[in-house]
Image (cartoon, rainbow, N blue to C red):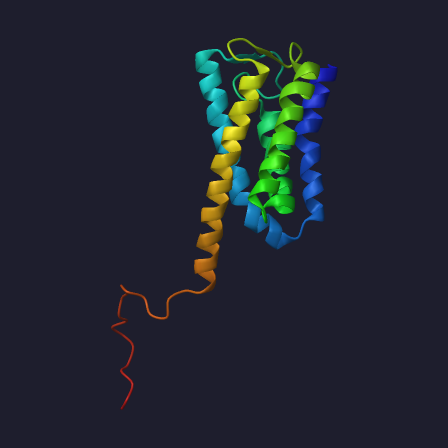
Length: 173
């Protein structure tokens, strides 16, 4: 019962922390957070197929494959906060991710392994490396996303391809 309560808390409570962020910050970093959740969900699917680990507790019927509390609670919100504080510097971002991923893989794993999940064909260090690998991918994604937003602020003056309105009168010369 305590484990399920912790899973519910880990899923819902982190979202309240986003109330402290401005709307434009959420708009800026929500795409990378959703992308990250998609990547981690895919990792959980692969882990299920390859039996890297198994879930022992879950709070939704489909939670036996993906840890919903982690992926759509702590992880998605944590991604937004980490990008908010560290995106200005790749090395700061990487150092923060190494620290957070190390805490998750080596400290929190000891608290939850056996109760919420069980590692089978992967060890803590491999989980740590997997998470670091994801951090490189999501940083590159956000850099690309920043370029997309910069282009939106300055659209081209005339579109290369467009449609002429046949009902519009021509201006008199």
